[in-house]
Amino acid sequence: MRYIELAKTVAFSYKANCVELMRIRRDDRIRIPAIISGHVRGRISKPVEAEVIAREQRLLADQRFTYLLQATQAVEFALAMVQRKPQGELTVRLFEMVYRDATHRLYGAAIELNISERTAKRYNSYLLKMVALRMGYLPIIDLL
Image (cartoon, rainbow, N blue to C red):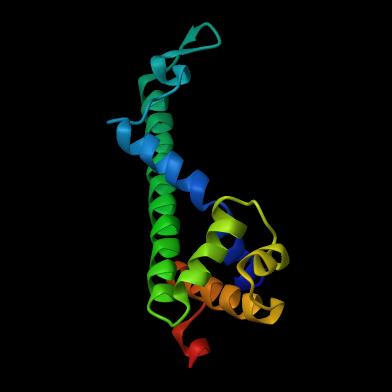
């Protein structure tokens, strides 16, 4: 999969990632499912097995938290880089319409913002390159 599709996935899931990240931060601890409670299918499980399962679930939860944090920071980094450019506000509004709120597609957002389709593609491409760069999908060498 090319970096642009990966960056689009991150951009489209930005709003959901923010909500999930806030939910995880609000919960002080990760909840462990009932399977860890010591009972598996009516039988008492072995404590070592229960601890291994609990550790694996904590590891997966930590990895998910790390990914969510990286993905939201990548989009925020891209938006900050975009705002430094001339016409950066248009790109931010384009992001909001296409990715965050998902009310328009790229061409519809271009019409709404009164810019050409080619300009919208250029702004979108730069935004996605910044997301891909921050996520590690695109090496810095490719931008030079």
